[in-house]
Every structure is written in C-alpha cells, then in structure tokens.
Image (cartoon, rainbow, N blue to C red; front, side, top):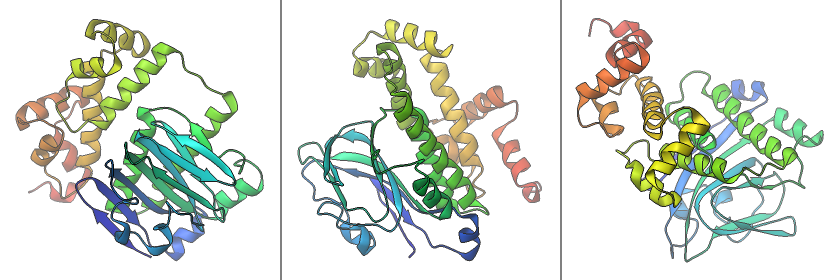
Length: 303
C-alpha cells in the first residue's frame, strides 16, 4: 500500500513497509491533515484513501493504531460501545481490531491531523497494559507542541530521507507519552495556562503567514496589552519573540530540504523580503541561511 495526496486543504500519505522497517519493531504507516468544511461529505476525497480507511463515518476495523488530533470543529467518536463528543483539542486513539467510527458535525466540519502506526513495540505496549482500550479519548487541549510534532511527522514522510521511519516513530512515541502523562495526572491547566497554550497553538498553526498578534488577542478575548503580559510571564518571551522563534525553527527544517532555495523558504514563511529574512535568520542562529544549506550539503559549496 502506497499512496499520496496533496491538495489545497489536505495532505496525506499511506506508506509502503520495507523489511528494514519491520526490523525496527515500529513502523509509521500513514500520516495526514485534512480540512473538512461544513456540510461536506465525510471523509473528504473518499476515493483518494485506500479502501480500508473509507468507511470511517459508518464504522470500520483497522489493522493498525491511529492517533487522530482534532484542531478545529466538532464531531462524534464511537468506539467499544462508548460515544464521545469531539471538540478542538480532542484526541481519538484507534486500536487495531476495534470497531470504531467518527465524523464531524455537518454544521461545523473539522480539521484533523492523524498518524497511523504498527509493529511489535506498540503491540507489546498494548499487551502489557501501558496503553489500554479503557483510555481511547483524551481532551488534551490545543497544544502547539503536539501540532509541531504532527507537522514534523508529515515532513518526514513527505521527504523520506534515510531512517525517516525511525524519526517518525520517535515522534509518535512522544505523542503517546504526552497522552499517557495527561491521562495519569488528570491535567487541568489554569486559565492563564490555557491562554498561553491556545496562543502558542494559533501561532504554530499560522507560522507560514504574517500573523497579526492583535488578532490573536481578539480571538483569546483579552486586550493586546494583557495578552502580552500573560504570555511573557509564562514564557519569558513576548508573543512577537516567540512567533519569530517559531519561524526560524520552521526555516531550519525547510532548509534541510535540498531542493528548496532560501528565497522559497522566505516566501513560504511570509517574508516578502528575502534579505530581511536572511538577516533575521543570521541574527537568531549566528549563520546565514545560505551557509546553513552549504553545511548540510557540502557537495554543493561550489554552486
């Protein structure tokens, strides 16, 4: 099974499995993000998914694990005789061999990120009770760190550089660790922590744009000055500083792609002026983006 889809509102990959991958005992089999608008049949682009995955709204059984993170909209998740109300920040944990279904509410639609995986390592976690059918739904909240992990997995499976499976599975383990930590602690962040986490999430989700921080404070329902004060108290950075750091980190990842130019990276992150981007990148990292690429790909230094 191997397929890929990249559209304006969706990107997903279904990956082949090699003998080398199976030796790891951990295999990433699929990853994606799909925006489903209100009043659109679900799943969107049904025929572009392999047949076993198409009946998610009616009911299905998968041979793999999946972790589905909802970042916008609402819906319903049914599994093992229980029904859960899905909202932004919900995680649905799909176990192999278990009947389940989920879909967005017609009036809201939703945005979902997912990763699918299999292998002896994860099966052993289930057998030993580290992960359990009793804990398949998590209201973990809108978290920028989780969103960044999903985006990293999508980058890995898109480029598929050597050992991308190992890097992807290490990211999957991080997601699992965050889910289990949340479940065991019964985490309930206070109001100000929720403000900061939602702000981080909004900035992470819009890192490619020239975001308006006053617009974020409006979405959070607080004044710009209060937003700045709360954010700096919890992070020791202003929202603007944090957003720039996100852009620089994202730029580093994009520059790792050999075929991507510095100009393309700048434009993809909302910088219309390539030279301003280069100065900012050097100020934050100590090295110009062009030099960064040459260190990554020394065979191109003469070019």
